[in-house]
Image 1 (cartoon, rainbow, N blue to C red):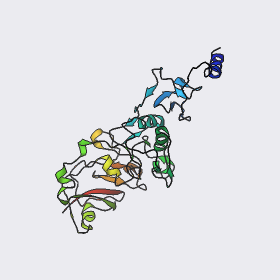
Image 2 (cartoon, helix red, strand yellow):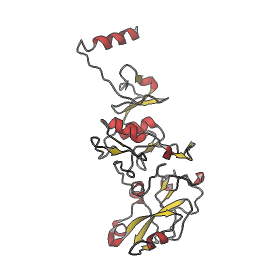
Image 3 (cartoon, rainbow, N blue to C red):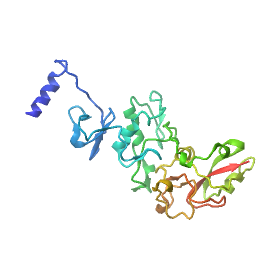
Image 4 (cartoon, helix red, strand yellow):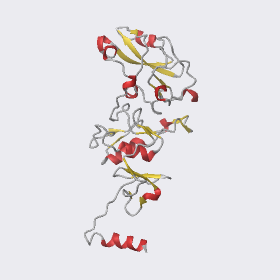
Length: 278
């Protein structure tokens, strides 16, 4: 009987002046679905006749970021939560959906007709999310916030790693990215004119790292207890090359310094981010 009334409602609803809401949705989720109104819900709370989550069901959540590291890098362990978190007005930033936007790590451009379509694309994984293309680098492989690669995203203020202005950009200081297996002494010394590496402990933040490196696997920091890097003898702001060893977490960025980072320290898998002073 319930199916009968659903069919009757679909057929007669418009004639009777009854409106029904239709949503786009992520379709393929095994456990969850996200819809274009910003809700995420388990499949049991999904209304197939409208394509929407049942907003009246307590299991449906709007703009949920349950599996996401919103303050660190905007990466999530669930695709559906990534999409709905991305749709929050605070998280899709200054993205202009009416213009062509380069999608991260793809040599293509797209025009999106809705925030939902943009977030679906932003959260998808690519080959850059994998190690040697046969396993994922991290469970948090769905990322909605990127700066590198042309995607405009809202930036966070990771104050716990931000240096004061007197050492960042003032007095001729520069933040410079190095090459693989290159020390900060080498990086600063090859500038024109040559500069000196600032030998104080230097920490960065994820948004700044993404302005210099892809950070395909997101950002990790020991300050919040999620850093997986165990093979590095010394922790310093760096990006691990995709061909790096699994224990070093290839394609991940590490914004902070665990101890005073020597200007001469280098690692075969790492590209350092350096503070150079005049």
